[in-house]
Amino acid sequence: MRQDGLERVTMRRLATELDTGPASLYVYVANMAELHGALLDELLGGLNLPGPARPAKARAILVDLLCDYTNLLVGHPSLARSVLSLWPSGPNYLRLIDSVLGLLLAEGLGRRQAAWGVDVLLQHATATAAEQGTRSESVEADGEGYRLATAIEEASAAEYPNIGLLRDEMFSGTGHQRLRWQFAALLEGIATVDDAGR
Figure 1 (tube, rainbow, N blue to C red):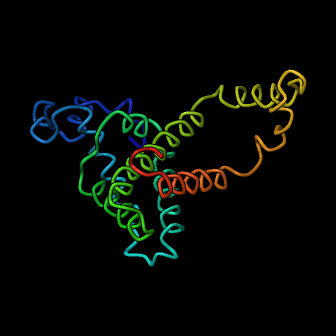
Figure 2 (figure 1 turned 90 degrees about the vertical axis):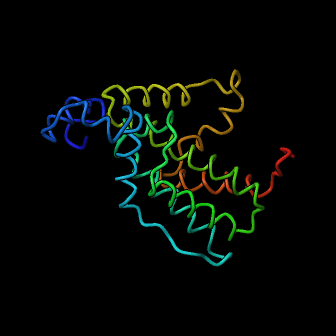
């Protein structure tokens, strides 16, 4: 996967690398989605998971953890795209879920807010990684980003008054600053919106 990308990882190719037959692999994984889940779990083994946190520090630690998870997946965009449509269930993924839940509870969230919030946070991290990683692979991404920035810069304030008002802010900040802000904003929402959506 590191050498050729996830798209090139097939059961047949993996079997050849392991000097066995493809049918033998199905004893260990049922399909490609399960194989992708196993690859994710292996990567997550290198993620530094925090221990219990004091309430005053829980949010900052959680934002750090979510950024670390996002950045891990940015380096593997094909895997991030795959993770969006599968349900990882390996032990390292469960440890990640458990860590996020513990930090949400330390933050003082209710049980349901924490249980529902973990899904939103990990989904956002994975989607962000899939988007950013895919852009980094694309030779056209820089041109597309330039076209959007130019269109916003040149947009008529009379025709697009809100763009005119905020155009200087729309591309401000570093990617790291914006990612931390996204997670902080999501956490604030999770903490303040009850399970009825009020």
